Length: 88
Image (cartoon, rainbow, N blue to C red):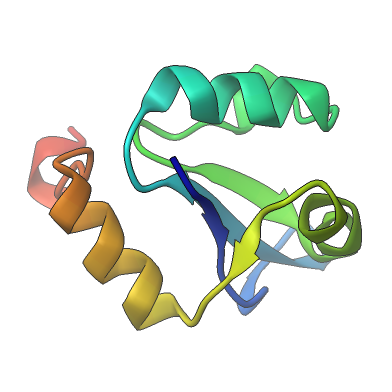
């Protein structure tokens, strides 16, 4: 399994946010996120929303930085992607 994180380009709550995903297994994604102090409420069906200031910690723990398009491509390929229309 690889945990991937993209660029923090999404503004909300006065900060920029990135996405943290797994390319294989949600259980391992949850374990990685918990080990890095990310609250479960940050999980949004197929990814964690992570603040920009968490990126150095996530990268040091083994997350791999990729661009947003690559993150989406690998999430789709994993079969874990939840499409926008299915989020309702």
